[in-house]
Amino acid sequence: MTTKEKKELLPYALWFNFFIGFYNLYLYTNSEWWFNLIVGSLNIGVWVFNRNSAFSLWKTKVVDD
Image (cartoon, rainbow, N blue to C red; front, side, top):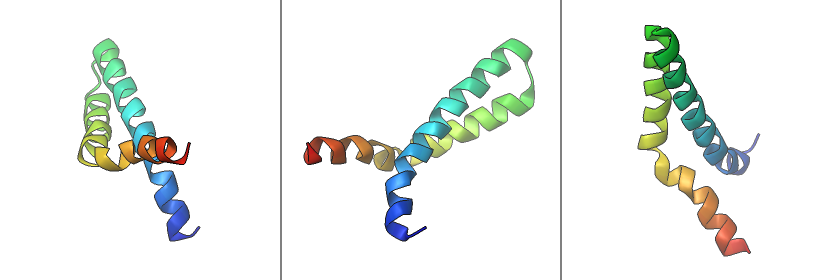
């Protein structure tokens, strides 16, 4: 996998982290497992600190169209 391919796939991985994070927080509210709270918080944290890269997915599609 080349560096260009990795940069293209990064936004998808960040959005996946975001949705998995919310799902883990949902599981925490239902089952109260600390593991789900910690993993969900970390997943959302990754998205928050890299959200500029996550939104680059939309910016490039708008420019390309």
